[in-house]
Structures are given as C-alpha cells and as structure tokens.
Length: 100
Image 1: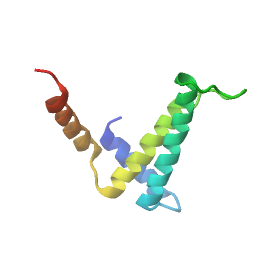
Image 2: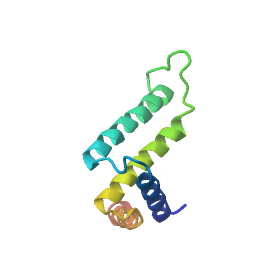
Image 3: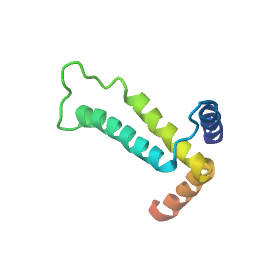
C-alpha cells in the first residue's frame, strides 16, 4: 500500500462514519494517547518495567497501526501529502546525516 492509498483509504473511511473527522487538536490528543499505549508495551518489553500477570505485547503491531492511522488523518486534515513529506525528509536526512 502506498502512502497515497493510505491517505485516500483513511479519508474515505472517516468520511463514511457519522462523526467524520475530529478536530485536529482532538486528533493530536488521540495520537498522544495511542503513543502512550505503544510506549507502555515497549517499556515493558525492552525497558526495566515488567508486565503485570496477563499482560502481553501481542498488540504491538496494532498500536503502531493506530498511530499511523491517526497521523494519516492529521495529514489529511492539514493538507500534507505524506509521500512528498517523507521523500523530502529522506532528502534532508541524506544531506545532513550521510557521511561523504
């Protein structure tokens, strides 16, 4: 799936729901919440904290997908073409960080 298709699919899905897009600031809060859920899993898997009995990291991929979903919704709302943005970001990193 391309980033363009992802943006189109997220847009179509959101527009098909009764509530439509949340406000960008609400989506930022949701993105923060989803990032916290991912952090909880990673801290328990790779950090010093340990999972409580019954907790697993089986939702790791789903939490990452949730973050990508909300970030994509924000990009749609803010008029950001993620394919262009990622290409420019690679270009920036290549100029700044690659050794000659």
